[in-house]
Length: 243
Ligand SMILES: NC(=O)c1ccc[n+]([C@@H]2O[C@H](COP(=O)([O-])OP(=O)(O)OC[C@H]3O[C@@H](n4cnc5c(N)ncnc54)[C@H](OP(=O)(O)O)[C@@H]3O)[C@@H](O)[C@H]2O)c1
Image 1 (cartoon, rainbow, N blue to C red):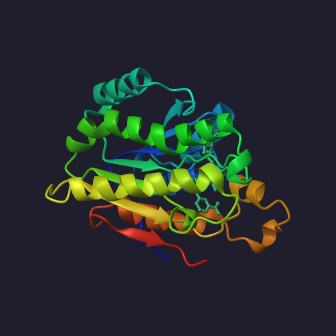
Image 2 (image 1 turned 180 degrees about the horizontal axis):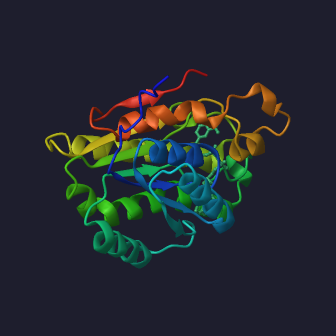
């Protein structure tokens, strides 16, 4: 049977953050399978290299590996990355912001301030800075796509979700602004994915008592990202997985 996403991203250059595991890795694999050259970003180099081996073994376009700590990277670092992408490709067709930090689950009055700042650095500030640096490259594409990863906590914050809920709500506001700001631009489109509960390290860290076997695998959400990165994506789409 032919995969409907086969070739959907042929020739595109897509940067995926969080590509070392979980949802990001599933999306990176799906993008490569759909014909894209993936720029795979995360800290864990070994996992990135294993991803590259799997993609190349499958005869898909060789990915570019981008080891980066989003907690520590500065605007200058993002400018350097964008400069390299410009030299190599002259454009970026898609940016999938998937990396995420959970922080701790604890009440606001005692929430650790350092953890709060680290979560915001990964979930919010790096998303802004990386997107700003890549913006001219997305504009240089005939079909620049930005896809952010939200969470149900961005829409309804429950007690103890602390910096995770607050940062995802901030990212949701950024998504809405990005989508509104490109509304009159025929080339750029911005989308958001709200994954349901999936079998990843982040989810199991949040709910250690969960039986992983009862959670769906992250691969099930990858087609939503491929669609939002593709030619037919509609600006402002929020793709929400049923819980
Ligand atoms: N799983 C769910 O049920 C669920 C539900 C709703 C939303 N989400 C969202 O989905 C996204 C992916 O999460 P996941 O569930 O797939 O979790 P995961 O398996 O723990 O993956 C998190 C990814 O983020 C990267 N990352 C974290 N901190 C980073 C840092 N400082 N610098 C660079 N990369 C960093 C990790 O890479 P390294 O450790 O290699 O750096 C990893 O690739 C997150 O935004 C999360 O909020 C997940």
